[in-house]
Amino acid sequence: MTLPGSLRLFINGEIVSAQGYEYDNLYVHFFLELPSRWSCPPSQQLSGVTQTCATKVLGKDRVAFFSFPFTLEVFFTQEDELESSLPQWPVLYFEVLSLDFWQRYRVEGYGSVMLPAIPGAHTLTVSTWRPVEPGTVSELRRFFIGGSPELEDLTCVRVPSTFQGDRLSRFGFRTETTGSVTFRLNCLQQSKAFLESSSMKKRMQSILDRLGGFSQQGSLYSVLEAFQRARRRMQEARESLPQDLISTSTVRM
Image (cartoon, rainbow, N blue to C red; front, side, top):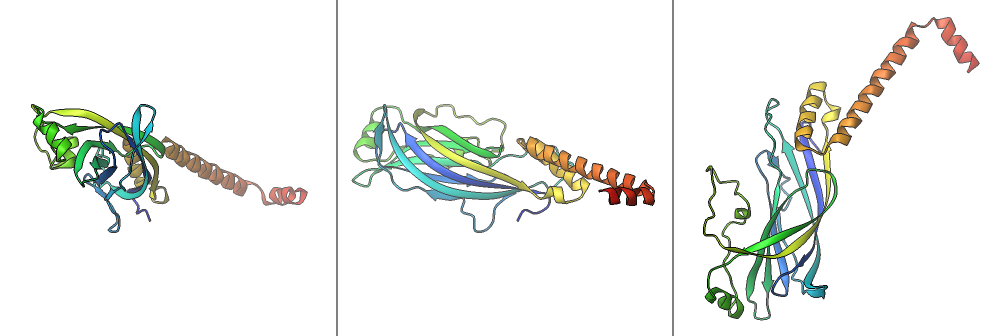
């Protein structure tokens, strides 16, 4: 149930496939980071791991089809009615790994995707990258014994939310582009604000305008309010008519 003054974001998602990676037997580890003023039910899992999937040749790439479903339910609440700053949207971080016959795993790529701000069905293909070390020793180690340079914090794929400085320098940090992961996200947004007072409606409408993608919901509010005004005017006009005229019109009908 959506509380007054809050926005519910519900997503039925699917990790469809991963393609363009060097090694076989891929799996994806992912988790959702919630910015400030976002929350989730206690039973909601914000992380997960897909099954290990063998690749098949499709065109020029080797593709692993996961078809791994997941569900996310989160809530946004604005604490200050006069606050005009744009809210931050949750970000889904993920890493692609491979596992060979000898149980050696390798990091194949890191990536992130911001949850869509527009309701509806979305298919997103996200490119990934992985850290590399200069020289051939690292690549030989990766090939023969597994393992590779890894990120200690997956949020470093973007600017971490815990970073407080003015500039984040990554000078000297070497990476290479790897493959890509395809997501399918079906987004639903729900708000109970239109059942509340006019001040609450204005507050929630300002939130929706800043979040974007709510023009249809705003037009629905306008149509309902216009209908209520027209209905009240019709009732007032009917009450002002003489009673004998109203009774005569009723008999003729």
